Image 1 (tube, rainbow, N blue to C red):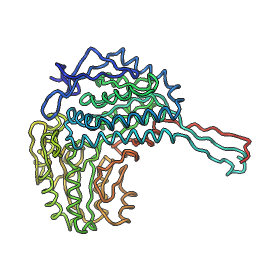
Image 2: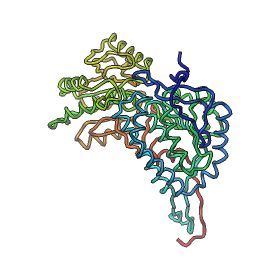
Image 3: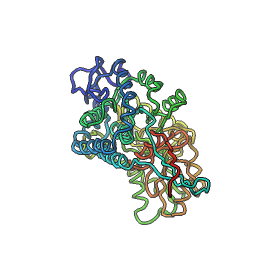
Amino acid sequence: MLPPGGARLVAMAKQFPFYVAGRAENGSEQLDVLNPYDGTVAGSFSVPDEAQVERAVQAAADVTARSRALPAATRAAALDHISRKLADRVDEIAELITAENGKPVMWARAEANRAVSTFRWAAEEARRFSGDLQRLDTDAAAEGRMAVVRRFAKGPVLGISPFNFPLNLAAHKVAPAIACGAPIVLKPALKTPLSALLLGEILAETDLPEGTWSILPVHDSRSAELVKDPRLPVISFTGSETVGFTIAAEVPTKQVILELGGNAAAVVMPDWQAEGDLDWAAARIATFGNYQAGQSCISVQRVLVHEDRYREFTEILTAKLADLATGDPKDPETVVGPLINAAAAERVESWVAEAVDAGATLLVGGKRNGTEYAPTLLADVPSDAKVCSEEVFGPVMVVSSFGDVNEAFATVNDSRFGLQAGVFTHNVQIAFRAQAELEVGGIVIGDVPSYRADQMPYGGVKNSGSGREGIASAIEDYTDVRVMVLTGLDL
C-alpha cells in the first residue's frame, strides 16, 4: 500500500530537495513519485520533519516586516529572474510535469509557458503596487485633506496547491506573495511535488531574504497543523470542495482564499449557425472537455444545445470525441492521457455506470484501461446523477437540449457550483445577459469555459469558492488596506 499522496518508498531516483527558509534541505523520509501512465519513477523527494517545518514557519514570521519593506525593484527583479529561468527550461519542465502528472506533453508545455507569464505579470504588478490618492475636499468639511490609500501584506501566506497543474497553480500562490511582500510557505500536492520543487531551485537563485519563501511537501496531517498555525494568517487553497470548506470552517478568523471545483457548462445558442460554427464549437468542446483528462476545474462537463441544432451538433461532437488522440502522454500527438491514478479512473468508471443504470445513453467512450478512461459522452442523463450534479474531474461530458435562453440559463444555474461557463453566441445582448444572470465567476463568449488568462481575476461563487486568483486579485486577498489622511494641504 502506498503512503498518503500516492508516493511510495524510494529506491533509486533523482532526488529533489525541499526548501526551508529559502535553503535546500532533505529529510529522513524519502518517497518516489510515480508516472500515472506507466508506473515508472518520475523522481523522488523527501518529507520535512517537524523541526524543519517549524523553522520554515518561524522564519516566515520573523521576516514579515522586512519582506513588506522590500523595494519594488527587488521584488520585480526576483520575479523577472524566475520568469526568464522558467522560459529557459520549458522543455525540461514540460517533461517533468508529464512524468509526475501524466499530462500529455502538449498540455505540459502550455502549463510551463503559462508559469513564465504568471511570474512576468507578477513582476509588472510589483512595479505597479503603489496605492491611490483620494481628494477628501469633495465635502466642504474636509477642505485641505487628502487620503493616501495603500495596501500592506497581512503576513505570511500558506499556499496549498493541487496535483492537476503542479507548476502553474504553485506559481499562482508564490508570485503574488513575492509581488506584494508577503512571505509564503508553499505546500504542494504529494502526488506531484516535483515541479514545485524545481521552481524552488530557481527561487533559490534570487536575492529574496531568507525566510521569504519555503516549499514543504508534507503529509496532510502536517498540513492540517499549518492551517491552524496563527503565524500564517492567510491561506490560499486550490483543491477539493470538501477540504476547502473544512479549512474555512476551522480558521474563521483567517483570510482564506478558496479555488474549488466546478461542473462547467458550454451553451450553444441558436444563433451560432454561421458556416463552420457548429464544427468549431464541437472541436473546442471535445478538446476542452478532455484536456488534462478532464482533470481541470473548468473543463467542459455539461453541454447544452438548442433543440433545433441538438441532433446535428451531437453527431458532430460524438465524432470529434472518437477522433481524439489518447495514450502515451510523452507522444506529442496525444491529447488525452491518464488520470492521476487508478482510483480516480475507477471512480469515473463507476459514475458513468451509475448514470447508464439510471437511464443515460452512452454515445461514445465509457471504457477504462488502468489509469486511462476513454473520452465519454452521455445523453438523457438524469439531473441528479453524479456526472451532472457533481464534479466528474475526468473525461466525461453530458449533453442535453434546451428550448430558449431562459431554460438554458436556468439549467446552467441549477448547480451548487459556479466557476465558469461558456456561451457560443454572436448576439451581444445575450452575451451581456449571460454576464448578468449566470451565477458563475467567469463567462467566456464564443468559446468554452476552459479559457483562463493568468492575469485576469479567476475564481467562483457558490461552492466553487471565494476570493480570486490572478496576480492583482490575489494581491488584494493577501493584503490589508491602510489609509493615511493628510491635513492642511493646499489642494
